[in-house]
Image (tube, rainbow, N blue to C red; front, side, top):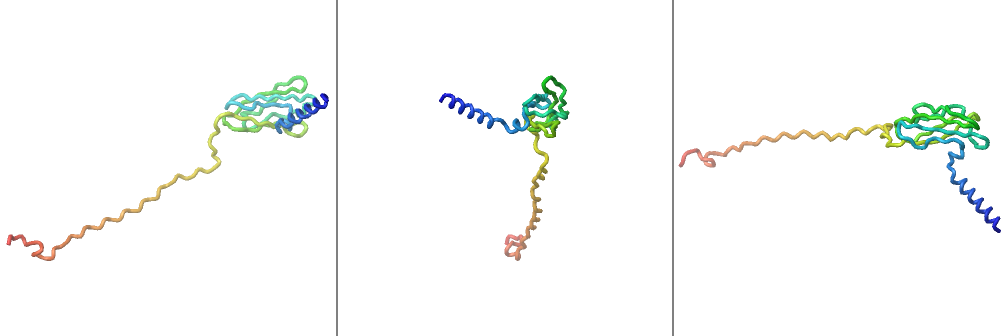
Length: 160
């Protein structure tokens, strides 16, 4: 009975672990990339493609629009170890990095350059709102002088 319970728990744990692995890690296991970096900061990559790791052997550098220069695999070692460094650009945002594999596929990771991205300039700015031009004011009508009808209404200037 104890063995069946133990086997059931192990199977459930394995299933949970398999479901919790991100899709990108399942697609190209064995290599890592700095996930967050300050603008202009150092980005590191590390690859272990030993037997059974599932990682591919790099056929070229890691490239990204977020890199100031491609990340060359400059540090190697025994058992399929590769690593290298590059510098992030200064524009914050989320970027994708990838390298070609000798098997023909490519390995991909995403990373974030921290900070607030500048405003999107791909959309055209709205023209400034213009106030409607005021209508020209109507000229004031000249005041009409009232002419008296005759002397008795206004007086002729004599005291009478």
